[in-house]
Length: 344
Image (tube, rainbow, N blue to C red; front, side, top):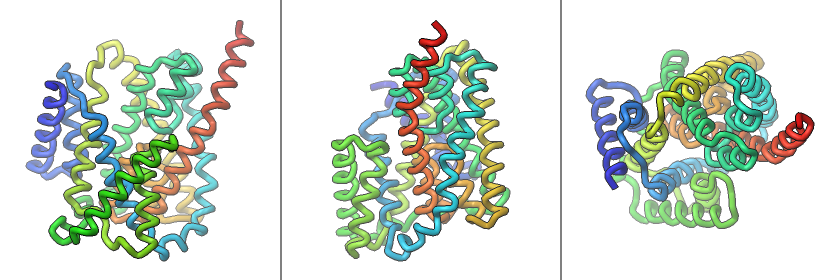
């Protein structure tokens, strides 16, 4: 129980400090920074997994509520950038696997699943099945999400002048009670239903699908209130920062530094793709950055909501990215086994 209380207290302190110093995204970046520093200092921390997942349903509902008929009409126009998502994933693999294998000496399974920009849990499950180093993969993926989430707000503000102080929704007092109740139903029905059928990203995609259906039926006219989205940010930040709990000096020297170096390569690769897409006029720059940045789906959804970007565009690309990565995982496992046999 004490590690949970530690995480909540430290995360709350991070929010308070970020608000006091007037730093951007206090509800997201505050808990990340505070929990990361506490973890590196050896403070035991952990979140409550069901609560963390439940808070992610807020983001699924928020995106689903934006999928009105007018938004759905714009989906066919996304194909020029959607077809580039598999290309981006392939480019990340071509850069990441040699980086982790030749420069840091990781085995193929660890190098592959550490470099693939999929969901953390999915990559750890596939990586463990292939014989990879689960702890190393966990730290590298946590670092990828951390660096991308911390770097993007400054890029968005510096390049596009994005207003990061925008409330992500209307105040709870202005949202009708029956609509809030309907959102809660959509969240839990979607989450539990998606979990039952084994859908990846069930806590976000399930509520998204159910809420979209309800919105298209004309029953829902509001997004979740700002307070709910701030709470979701808090738990996401808490989860990211707490993943470093128990890190050893040896892991910091190797896995953490390897992860940071990989993030630099990822950011450079993302900039190349964003510049090319923007130059050819395929999509606006800010939306493209949020859609192609290889961070976590939940974190990028939060940023899109806050800066007022086209959330449907951003989420569509991240869902496709995760889908491509997960489809490629069994192929990679078979390849790894063939390589292992040929080496012996």
